[in-house]
Image (cartoon, rainbow, N blue to C red; front, side, top):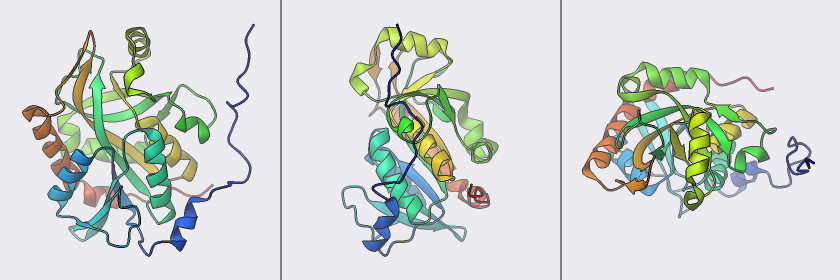
Amino acid sequence: MSIQNPLLVRPEGEELVRPDRIRNYTKFRCPRTVFVCFEPCMFDVLVAACGASLAPSWIRRDRPVATAVHQGKPVALALAGVGATAVSIVAEELIALGARRLIGIGSAGTISAHVRIADIAVIDEAIRDEGTSYQYLSPGLTIGADSRLLAELRRGELGRCAVPAVRSWTTSSLYMQRRRKANLMRALGASVVELETAGLYAIAKYRRVRAAAAVVITDSCRRRHYSRYRSLAVRRARKRLAARLKNAITAIDGLGDLAPV
């Protein structure tokens, strides 16, 4: 006998807590292109690569936002935090303040033989094995990146160094990744595992903005878990990713906004 979960329903009705309320508390207005960093180490590397400065009028001191200008194009860099729930708070507020193109940047573990430690992966789509995406969209197996933003990232320097055609497994718990579940996700086409992308893509789809994500592979979760998070190879990969994202700012900025529904 199957029992339908009453919580898995299409989100609808009045929003009780509106993200645009943040306009009452800050004078910060966000550039339309934002790099949403999931970890402090990636945020620091991007800030250095872009020569960015912290935005003094941004109100969340534990989740800083910096801004920079590259070839005349403004960009914001935000530290959102680990996990889709943390990302949702910052992403929603930045969208309310003007963001229209979100590029998630973080780390992932490999569950596939063709993805190795210190590889860079651009995530085409994510399996929704978390909770945040279901607050925004009806139930479904996967959610994809914005096709034009994804194509722009793959067209430039980043595409030439990134692993092609990556499906990610987005989960909610770092410490509940089990071998049996990993085998299932691999059978469903996933090659990496992380904690944020499905949530970010769902928020973007719901709010009608563009989103894509790129990650550095820091861990292996294939036969047994081992981490190279602080290794020299991974640190170099973060710097390569930051440099290539910086060089893509002008092209990303040229993408138009999605039309409202």
